[in-house]
Image (cartoon, rainbow, N blue to C red; front, side, top):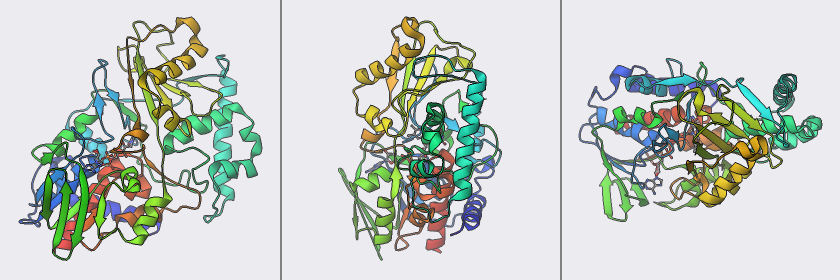
Length: 455
Ligand SMILES: Cc1cc2nc3c(=O)[nH]c(=O)nc-3n(C[C@H](O)[C@H](O)[C@H](O)COP(=O)(O)OP(=O)(O)OC[C@H]3O[C@@H](n4cnc5c(N)ncnc54)[C@H](O)[C@@H]3O)c2cc1C
């Protein structure tokens, strides 16, 4: 499917589902699926989106979720006094067409625009770099990526790092540009530049408008779609059978049957093959699952008694010698009264951080803060950590194209399997992979595919 076809397909799915108007939330419209039984595996935003849309069409739907809570990678911890987003933190491109913005509006979510340029960066010795140097770093980062986009053919199989080493080696000798490649690109793609495709490093689509954080808690946007659904929590699926007569789903508590099954588990779970498909997924699906990348992004939130940082500045960057190690920090004081700093590890360092104990991770991140602010960094009153790549129900953060990979590896996963099994999730939609809106759209698409199959 070419990019235009893909976008038209998603738009059609959106229009058909009624998701473009928030008023359609929770209201039953056509009853095209009356009497049809559907099992949905996974209660992240994609699975919930599919389930809501199917129920609105009259289907009998049961959602099976391994964790004791819904939301998956959209999960909020309120224990710091301000929302800590364990997974997704931003609504990217919160324009009127963005269906996640519509969900946010439906619950009256409070949002604040984050300003990427509202940033102070420190070098590896903890010295603040001046504004002219920061402007040059940002310009050079953009220039290198533009050069990659201009000079590479679509079939180029190099990694982003490999292509930069060949075409603009000077960039890899500049710690400022390496920092930007990590803090911006590795964070955005959830991948190291060593494992990310050069040619598809930034080829996805986006809705317009500056990104926002949801200061009232991101997970609240799920309540309108989850309300009233039959969701079985703490119910891990171990097997999915599908055939001419319908589907069979196996859990620790027994077996359920239905007409169709939607499988919304993360790419990391599909890669780990912890769910046995019977018959096995067709070879093309298995190849695409293997061929897609699934990296990690690690977060730590520290709450302090008093701030030791400039409370007016939104972001702090630190050019840590180890690429990706706690190199980007969000200052909650720019949108909350709480003295919270949120640190990020990305690229190759994120899985390393994920494997640390909470105490070791806190010590590691505090070392970076002390390199900058010295003894002014007090003892945090509270710390929260994430470990996405070692979480057995997720096994990573979000999907990305690897060197030699193509957009079709994502999109082909969305094709119905034997008209019975429908995969959805952020990894099934190249244009909006790695986002909440991509995941949600993929769930709406799966519901539309079932309506089509049931005709
Ligand atoms: C650290 C991090 C930061 C992010 N930042 C952003 C951001 O700022 N903005 C943005 O738009 N997106 C962001 N994302 C991406 C976004 O969170 C995801 O794209 C989206 O939430 C994925 O939704 P999903 O439904 O595809 O998968 P998930 O939310 O992972 O849902 C899948 C569900 O399946 C369940 N499951 C797994 N195995 C089984 C099983 N065997 N049986 C039953 N259930 C099972 C899981 O527990 C989970 O609930 C971020 C993600 C992470 C991890």
